[in-house]
Image (cartoon, rainbow, N blue to C red):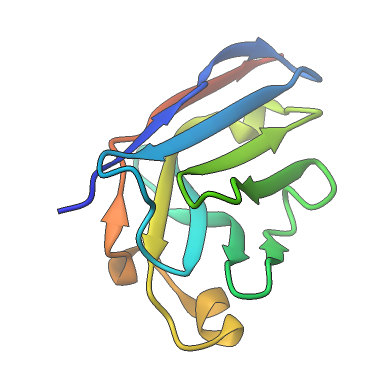
Length: 128
């Protein structure tokens, strides 16, 4: 079973930046639709950034558009989330995820219950 491990979370003031990283225990991230989800206690998991590996097409939630950038290593070993201009409402547990899908459209439709591979999460806290 592939295990994903996130790193790079922490505490930052509003307006600051963080870069999250994700690596697979087996060396390669399995799946062609990779995404970062986040969760605030008591709320559902929200997909904030997705990348479809066959075309490197990306998609972002409206709330993070133009502030966050998802990218992956060409060696399929790592996934990143560059987060700039952070806001207090970005405070959440962030999860690295991956799943196999048949199209970019299906990648956009993936929800938390659809995810095959996920990490334990890394906490991001943004103070005002």
